[in-house]
Image (cartoon, rainbow, N blue to C red; front, side):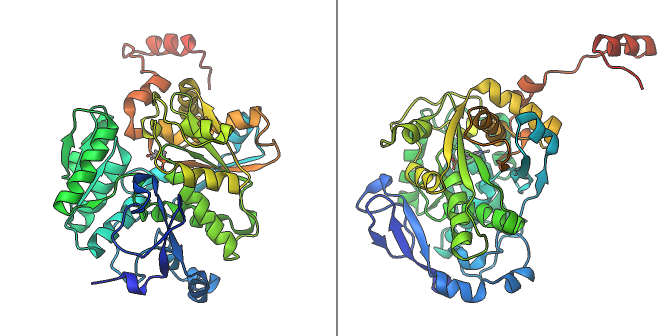
Amino acid sequence: MSTSASSFVTDLVCLSCGRRVPEGNVQTCGACGPEGILDVKYDYDRASTTLTRDSLSIRDRDLWLYAELLPVSPAAEKPPLHIGWTPVYAAPRLAKEVGARRVYLKDEGRNPTGSFKDRASAIAIMKAQEFGAATVACASTGNAASSLAGLAASVGLRSVIFLPEHAPVPKVTQLLVFGATVIKVRGTYEQAFDLCSAACERFGWYNRSSGTNPYCVEGKKTAGLEIAGQFGPSVPDWVVVSVGDGCTIGGIGKGLSEMYRMGFIQRMPRLLGVQAEGARPLVNAFESGSDLVPTAADTVADSIAVGKPRNWRRALAQIRGSGGSMVAVPDDDILDAIRITARLGGVFGEPAGVTGVAGLRKAIRSGIIAGDESVLVVITGNGLKDIDTARKAAGDPVSIAPDISSLEAELAERGVTFP
Ligand SMILES: *Cc1c(COP(=O)(O)O)cnc(C)c1O
């Protein structure tokens, strides 16, 4: 079944050389190689005939809501899991703590496998089915893989995951629970990535590796479309996103731009991209104005420990186009963000999930974001994804003898008063 004919996609354009590529089973630009990230283009005029406020009001609220702006046929059968349309919470105590007028948290940890990556994997499995692949594969240190494994399981596709040696145990456990074929590669992430690409070519598997697949970013875009839908005219001044490969912020920026272009919002929020100090190649490129230079990647936030981001052009174009900015934060600030996001906002995020909160605080202190502006932070992954780091941030419980005087002594020790 070919579903592409009935979608609103026109073609793809290389973000590096501008070449146009027809829609189909492509990964990167043939002329530019892996550097040639492709961007999916749509017929917005045709899309706007059916994508209207009235038609939206009667559709299911999930990832598939803005069907005309996705690279899949609106009529194609979707996976059974609920993905997207994640909740947005006002966090007034967190706002006070960081010094912003208004802070909202969009909890992506509520997606079926606990991270933002489900948005991309949903599109990947649709494309795999469209292109007739029975197996999907990716190289990943964590969320992209667990997400692909979960979504593949939900529709009966096989998944093969290439892991570099170090990956957090909970994420690896997710893969195994979902029945993925998990291959640990003795080597770097780059080597796992290259092996995955070679295997997909050899065996005809569909490749969902982060950063290069042109359709995955269209799934990530849905968070941007949604932010416009959830806020409407009161869209926040800033949207803050943690950055690894750059697809998440690039996708969210694209989604917001499309909503602006189609008249659903009257102004574009500015994008703040946040990286960890130990893995800040995109911040360097943003500050210097030159092309990306790969760096080391050493941070507690494993999901953004990317030294050689693949989608840097898209990320920088979206951030600059929005009049936005970038900051880097040390690991200690990320640990602090785990605590304050949970204690003052009620949302438990993984390290990369709350890196945006650390970045928000830094951006306010350095005057990038003004104290009277409103900010949405995308909490990109659930805190249970990385328990070891959460414990570093929160400590361990102290045990006492089972009697009231021990309890009183312990409470006094902690300065807890009554009632
Ligand atoms: C992948 C990921 C990111 C960053 O997304 P990129 O597209 O790599 O920039 C941020 N947070 C979490 C939890 C992630 O899994």
